[in-house]
Length: 310
Image (cartoon, rainbow, N blue to C red; front, side, top):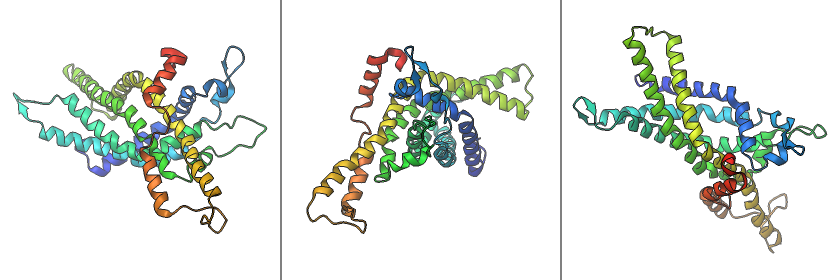
């Protein structure tokens, strides 16, 4: 992809990620529910904690936010990855015909940089998606609700709180991509070399597609297994973000409600000064979406469920 135009890389990366997201989204929903602290309460029943049918209902809840965010975030990722990789390869000093910096380190640095860019775009959609996946629409006695809209309402007073999960998402994605892409590049190169040496390389679209799929699937699977504990903690942090955003509004609402002479809007609701509101909103981005640190959350999961919980 390094020789392609920027627009080609952007379109190819966005289309690939968009297609994959749609295919695996039901599995992602089930994964979120399994990793949720409310898993047993919402998705198991009976004395033996058998998985209930509600686990497999509404598996496409929240997919709209992913569709909107995947195109720009994935395009930005592959654009940044190819750009940084090209710059680092050109700047890599040569010694005895080989680069001084090993190629896997260049791939890891390029993918890590690209991930930081992508996460900034993807974080709000990821927070909305995971909270929407947990909306309970399984009760036939209640009318179904739009899970995405229900989640968005929890952030309507402080939309910037949607970015509180950035650190958690980057903390999961950085080690994942730093392992996946060097393995992907090396496996793909080894398969091509193997077939070239034996004269069986055809260079057809089908062959290139299979080689890429096998390489990406192998590298991604290994990286996913290693980073699953981080992913579990990330899910807990993002599910806590919605509740935290709602709780942030309570002190403000209570203070304004009881304040004498408070300024009210046309509907009679108390108003904060624009300057104060903006300052508080900006500060909330850096605030942890949970009262506990990620390490404490991991310790709690291990204490309650052991290694299997992670």
